[in-house]
Every structure is written in structure tokens, then in C-alpha cells.
Image (cartoon, rainbow, N blue to C red; front, top):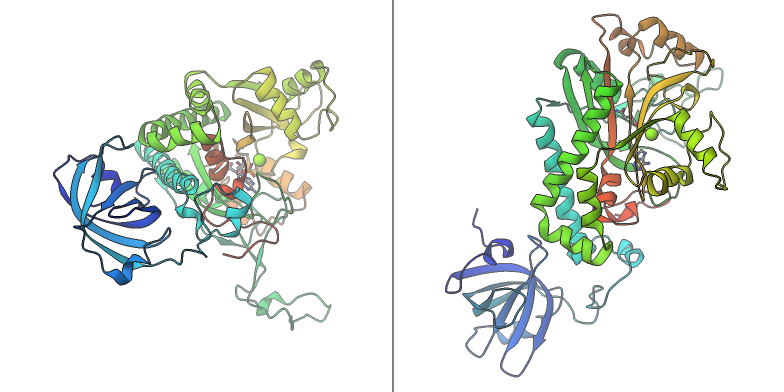
Length: 466
Ligand code: 4AD
Ligand code: MG
């Protein structure tokens, strides 16, 4: 591969010959000279290309040289007088590869709203913000893999199509090859799934966890990292119907080890990101959320706050604040409660454990009921200021009888989950894991306020254009 990308070129000295290809951000034409700001996506900065009377450029192409056009320029790097960059390209020749009509290119020099840019999701990668989001997304994914690889975790590619509701929450997208206009029926009027592709109902997975547990039971340290799907009808700035989740799973590990792993994981990947994405992160700090870098550095330095759900409820009651949703032991923490804990009370990420069993998934390990008779599970949510839940996880129920009884209680079909129960029959071990919403973390590290703006092509209720 040749290295003629803006990111590398800007590191080179005046006097170096070079060739560059990219898209015109702006083009200023004066009488005998024009200045083109060229971006190729390799970094936030543009390379300034200067064309003068000596630059060879076909007359026919001059008109096509507009914002949005793709060009190739050849020439020599020269010192940039008073420019933002140290060098610019004095072009000996310039070729328009694909022109762009001046009057209809949707990305103009002015600032566009994120709402407007969502309507042109195929062009927004060419803006500063989405260019930066895309690079940060890439670097963060690389940091995540590097963290796990360094700690001997195996990346397991868990399936996307499944027959199981891994969270037991019932918000699945169904996958079928049946014709909706002529669904085959049994005599009793129910759908005859024997005629469907898998000969049973099938869905897009909501989590890779159940499958990855099988590999934690053989390889001890594993993780999945891929797309997951939820047909939640929640049109919020934090929910997508298709999002990416990172799910480590660790054998011989209890809830305390799980909390340590989550904290180490967040801090290490965050430091790696700050190190490897300096220019883009400085952009988010300047343009999107002032104070972002100081906030993130603070997160890396301080230990996370750790409290139980019961303690959280007590703190919320003590706060004397009037919340929209009442504080009551047994109810799930709402966004306003999470904000109070992370933003006001502790001003730091908070790990909450020991949630009521009734509001958490069937697979979580049950605590002894104790004197209060309240049934809790070894769940763990990591909450962060400005966002709320970024990680959800737990120690898993590793006792066959207890898990089977809980599944019966919730009406889950023991036979369908038979293989999952088997893991508790053959060499069961205490094990734990968690899921990090990758886009939630991207929002956190970039300061972007809407989850639709940190994924290339968002899927949300009623929105599937791209
Ligand atoms: O808390 P959740 O539902 O946990 C699980 O799925 C477990 N199986 C994970 C595990 O233990 N292996 O989801 C995990 C995280 C949430 O904390 C949140 O960050 C993110 O996934 N998430 C979503 N992100 C975007 N859009 C949605 N609709 C999301 N639902 C969950
Ligand atoms: Mg959760």
C-alpha cells in the first residue's frame, strides 16, 4: 500500500513529491491561483492544495472543481505560509475524478444540524463530526480487541439467528421465510412453524451471552463483539433496534471479579483511545462537549463508586428530591435516579449490584434471601454521568436446580434451554460476564447526544432508509 494519505503527508517535510486523492471540502478560486481544501478521511485535517498558472488542469475540468468533487493532485510539498498545517501541496497537475454540481451538493460550508445530517446518512461521513466519529469508533473497537487479546480472551463469533430469547424480555425480531400473506396453519389455527426455514420460530439475537457461556465453560476467558437486535419500541436518544455489544464471559469469576474486570476494561480502553485518537478527541472536546477530555481523564484516575441497589434506594430516599417516578424497593432505577446517583451524589461512574430478582434476567445468580426476605440477584449495572447505564452484567446462576426452578417460575421452556442448563450439569463453575453497549460508550467518549449519530446507519422505530 502506498502511504499517500493526508495523515501521513502532513508529517512530511517540504520538498517531498507527492500524490493525493480525496474530496474537495472547499475551493477558493482567485485570478491565477486556487486553494483547495482536500480531505481523504484519514484524519480530521485537510491538506491544502494550491494550483497556480503552472498547474496542468484540463479546462473542461475546471468547472467541475467544486465542493464534493473527488480529485487527484500531484506536486511538491511546500511550507505553508501562515496556514494551519506546516505543509501544503503545490500542484503540478490536478485531475477531477468525479465532479459535483455546485448548486445541488447537500453539504455546504455552513454548519448543518445533526437531524438534517441523519437525512443524508450516505453523505454525512464526509463531515468533520462524522469523520471523527467513524475514526473514533474504529480506534475504540481496536482498543477493545487489544484489551481482551492481551488478557488471553478468545473472540467467539456467536450466531445472529437464534431460537432463544436470551434475556427473557420478549422484544425479539422474528426471522422467517413464511409468506405473510399465506401463513401455513395447523388444525388448531396456530402457525405451522414446521414449514418455516428452521422448522421452528426463529429470531435475531438480543445477546451473544448464552452461546458464549458455552465457550467460557471450555476456554475460561472469552468474549463476543457483534451486532444485537432489540425490537424495543423506545424512541429515545439512547436506544437502537440494531446495536453492537461487547460481551466478555469469565469462568471461575464471581461478581467482585466481574466488577474489577469492567472497571479495568473501561479505563484501559479509554486511555488507549485518548492516546491513539488525539486529534479527533480534541475536536470533540472543542466542538461537541467542552470539558470532555478533563472529564474522561478524571474517570481513568478515580476508582468507580460501588453500591448495592438497596443502598441506592436509601440514598435516593434520603436525597429529599421529588422524582417523577417514585422511589420504591423493587422498582427499576429510572434515568432520573441514575442521573442523581452519578451526576449529583457521586459525580463518577457508579456500579450498582444486588438488584431485585424480579427486574433482572432469569440467568442471574440468586443471593440468599436473608432476614428481609427480599430476593436479589448478583446483577451489576455500570452507570455513568450524562448517560446512565453503559454496562449490564452479572454473576450467572451456576446451580442446576436453582436455575431450572427459576426458569419454571418464569415459564421458560426447559427443553428449549436444555443445552444451556447442561452447562450447569457438566463441570459447572462460578462464572460472570457483562455486556457493554458499544454505541453507548461511543456517546460517552465523544459527548455526542444522540445514539443515532455514533453508528453509520442507525436503525430505529420507523427508520430503515439506508
Ligand atoms: O443490560 P443488557 O440488556 O445486558 C445483556 O444483554 C446481557 N446479556 C449482557 C451480558 O451480561 N453479557 O444490555 C447490555 C448493554 C446495556 O448496558 C446498554 O449499554 C446496551 O447493552 N443496550 C443498548 N444499546 C443501544 N440500544 C439498545 N436498545 C440497547 N439495549 C441495551
Ligand atoms: Mg441492562
